[in-house]
Length: 294
View: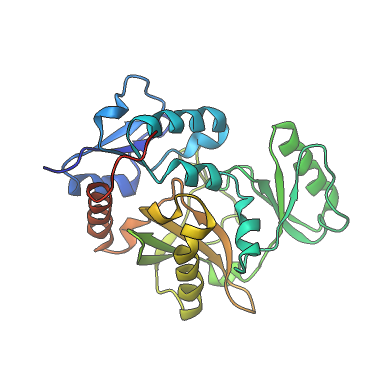
């Protein structure tokens, strides 16, 4: 019998995500449910797999409390400990301490001022808790505008992060490497978002231009090493069913922009075999694991 799996979305999405439309027909015991739906009996599922819960950034405390409840009655995928760690991008500092090349980042908490010079040049200012480019802005040589955006994020209760804008993305794009069941599945190329006018067809994330890509040897080496290191980086890191490593190009090689372990798009549409690989990996992950609640 196929395991009963809840693939979790949000009520705010007007229609199922492309990944969900491709994945659900391949998982006989799968159902698409919203995390905000209080009528759902989460304990009736063998596993609850996060997918398009992209509004969590505006409701983080509620979302984590919901994840805690689900974790207490069934298997949450990815694990609760991973979700807690990954929903705040300050994990990038831990990746850097572990020796991985990441986009240089300055964090500015509420009540703090940015270090001198951090707001100069071409920079990206965004919240540490955010998804789909929400709250992110590219600022070109305007420290006053950067300061205002940091202040606006602080006023909204956010921690700000400041990164240099790595302009090779304008010509080479951003590479997303997707892993399911701990194995590399496929790669996608994302066109730059912040340097052009953003469109928001759903209101939850900026529309992206996504195409299939072949990861370079350097990109595979970096992303493979990060996925292999997850058990030592975060509690539950050895029990992730999916991961996406987003890399930006630089003159000295790729650097990590984000490590997506909570609710990443898996860009299943760019590879004909990707949906079946993901479905098989998810079913095997659920069938091969035990109850991890407490």
